[in-house]
Length: 265
Image 1: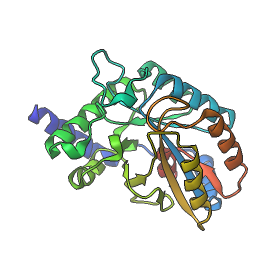
Image 2: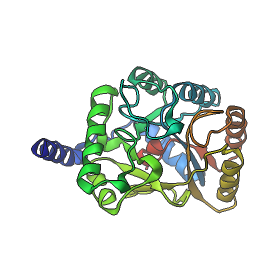
Image 3: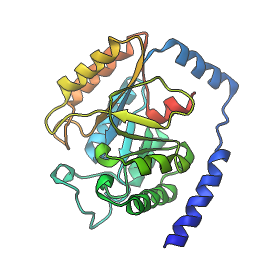
């Protein structure tokens, strides 16, 4: 098992530098122009992959011509999946749904192999779970490239060792910390976020957005989960709808998935 992971790891490390980032010149110019005009980036990072919530989230984002940022657990849809806590006792989607949502323009990223808190594991155990997660995504999610992906730590709980190692496997990772990050820039591999729960997050999310808008610039990454009654710290779907409508009308604001923000720089 160790030899298998070592070889797999080496291949990925060597391959990161060859990840394709080619895009049409017109699209690239448009992306650069947008980054120059927008000073307040907002990423609502939806975790856990609850089926009903994910489908509704996608519909609401599509209504406003936006792409959602959805992070899913690699094995949550499989029989015998052990729930990490009571808040995950909700039907989840599978890779059939994740591929459909990706085809519709939404961002699908990793949220762990089994939603383990990696601060409670050894470095070797945590690393093994990340590699297992990457393997499943590579097999099941169409057009998945590890070097273009973001690993979203379960419980927003990382370790210094994993943070140092992960950039050899993925483009970036999300963990706990300040909700407001610097604007996307070259070499940015650590993204930090905040969240709120276990109750409804409507007011807390609004307050974090207001903090961002009070600053000259910044990138708010807010860790959301399910909608309405699903999951830990749910967001009301009607509030999300109104929020996206309001924010889309603000000239300095761009609502953007994390991977897209990093890719466009």
